[in-house]
Length: 195
Image (tube, rainbow, N blue to C red; front, side, top):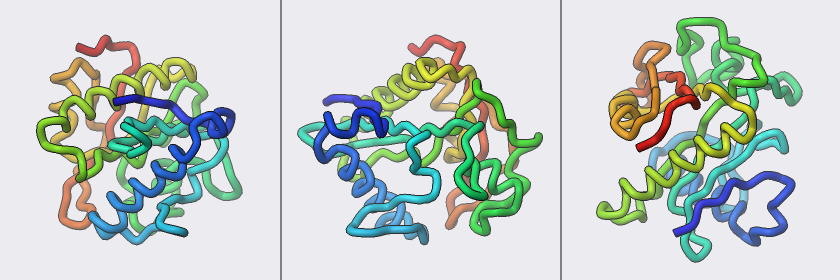
């Protein structure tokens, strides 16, 4: 199992990995979760997949097992900035605008974590190990990017799991219903040490 942080600067080094990550996202979010998201050629993407973002992929032999996207809160592309802020501003119809208890920050030290997934193809016996690899690389990459905090939307029970592995993860908004599953906006400190 390998873990790679992808950027537009290093895509050429990793062959099909970038495309395979978008294919894995398609399977997870469009085929499995039935979310209505942009897609092309069996890949899921949106307006936040820009050269400013980074993508962490856990993979084996080119198959993407898990992933997450990191986006700076300072980035803008047309009318869009980052998902949580844009939802708060009412630009995204599928995410409630009251998802965060405070004004969404625009700060070079705060990045957004989004499109977090573990593929349903990962065997149950490997899921925790894959999640740990993803979390570890996400924290390492975020720190290297200068992030002291990540904001993200995760399943409502995930903050407990995050704290169990040493991640300082605090809910900062109400529980929201996304297709029958509860999710919550969280703030994750990059200052903590992982177990």
